[in-house]
Image (cartoon, rainbow, N blue to C red; front, side, top):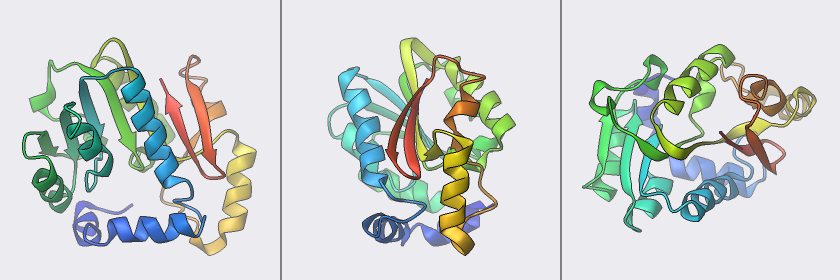
Amino acid sequence: MMNSTGFDLWSRDYDKTVQLSEESDEYPFAGYKDVLNTVYGEIRLGQGKTVLDIGFGTGILSKRLYDEGVKIFGVDFSAEMVNTAKEKMPDARLYQFDFTKGLPKELEGQRFDFIITTYAIHHLTDEEKISFIKLLKTCLNANGKILIGDVAFETQKDMELCMEQAGDEWDDEEFYIVAEDLKKSFPHMEFKKISFCGGVAVI
């Protein structure tokens, strides 16, 4: 698993790395922009006013919402990612924190219309994902939603096929969402398949 230092070093080239993978329609970022646009569309459709972004990275998605007047809160464990995002969104409330340990104390008592996480939650094991999502659900306003955009698959078979195609490029240190498994804990979850290796879970 990449640590915060690794992400600090990666922050300068992160967007370029994603773009190259997406343009080649390759694992892991095939469909990346469509995943972000799907999350964005859900928020705009739901007229969300307050959004918590978990693992916001360089702030590509949050900045788009921020510019439209959405109140942005965010958590990322890379200091460089936080600094980059703060330059883009000076009035956002952004915190450097390792979300594998939960949420920072500064967010205690806060409630959100949407909680989003894109290409970040795969750092949690399946068991940790379930616990973390349950924690996030307690931070939602009435009718609020959690939107998870990531490397994700409808079925275990789909993931195994992608793993086979990726070969040596497959990252064994990440834990991707398999919708049919996650629905056992969140039966009302909706899954939107975006690409052969990307999707959005709505909880």
